[in-house]
Length: 113
Image (cartoon, rainbow, N blue to C red; front, side):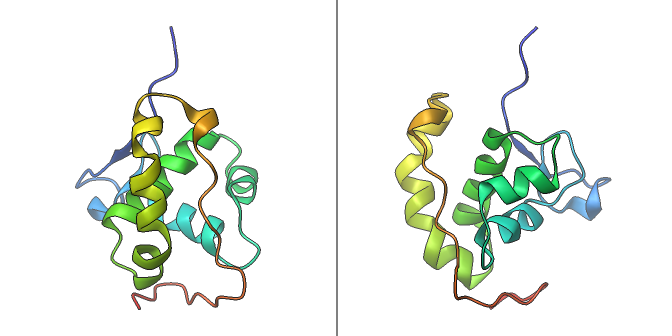
């Protein structure tokens, strides 16, 4: 049996309906902040949550880039998310580069600006 495809789920009974990495209670924005924050990376996210795969982290970042409400995610990740969606959904993960991080950018947790 193969592993399920990475996805985001939104369930009322999980984190009050906050978008989470599928199969977990980890909000996608939590993962995005690990990747985007100063010094952040996909490796930092997978190291912080060892049970997550690179693919799950990329899908979480894609979701935040496309549907996130924070200004930093819309500005920096929308083009990345749109430009690599086809490869992601076709399962060609080796063609998907890590999203840009926000070195030299300060992120306040919970900030929507």
